[in-house]
Length: 370
View 1 (tube, rainbow, N blue to C red):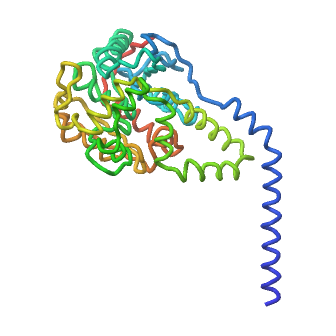
View 2: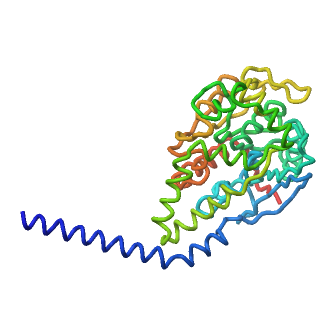
View 3: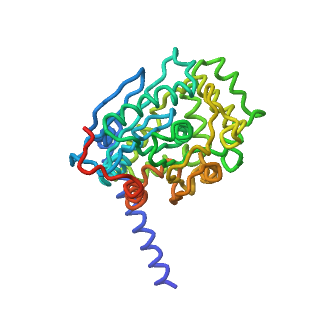
């Protein structure tokens, strides 16, 4: 008994000593915490702005080798938040994984809508700006079609674009894209029901959908993780240099919120979240009927098992609606953002996605996009 008690006492003393050392390490790391907080390290892969329209900018990323192996990839990001989540850090950059896979990469940065942009509708983004971007990419790459990768809301927009302009899209890949809004697996589907959310009152009052409203909504979907666990994890790892780099890069992006053009937000909520018109075949973009059966190209659906914003079944709901014969699904044990930035996604998942694009594309035979 005495030996056991002595061993227990020694173990407790060691744990107390180790915790004391950690506390000192945390205190001494305060200067580097402030340094990372003030200047978070982001990837910012070298790129050129090759087209501008209003707030929109089209980025073309520079390659380490001059020649791409096939048609380019155009990334369509959402109208919510900033697109640099896809180029967050060198080891967590979807853009860099695609470049490493031999692809030529373009990305749409929609910019920040001004108050005067509140009347912009989805047709202005898709049939207007996005179609102009497509013309630029096709002309620069000297190809008849391009690969299209859409993330989240950008995936919904990419689906609509492909249904309307199938001749421009060689292959379509959707990344955590909401398509079928009939399920109740996600809180957003419940919160946005007509009886719970009056989108008209919000937009009539504010013009554009306020970024603070969007951020609060996303945070309240996982309150314990966002308001408690995150800060506990920070306090326990503030002496870890690698942790700080990742933490403040994510904090920079998470808090870099932007508004959504009012009429676009109203249309997206009413037509999709509340009426599920896309899969019902009832949606019209302006005066054009959107028929998902027009999508015949190879289709790659990317989903995250623990996605609290877009359940995988919402994305997979596209499958019975299209005419595509070549359809593949890839799912990863991650969340909505982890699909883009988790280390597990970048070890195998994204290299495989790049390979899929190459295998389903046409070799360019020495041609390059410049």
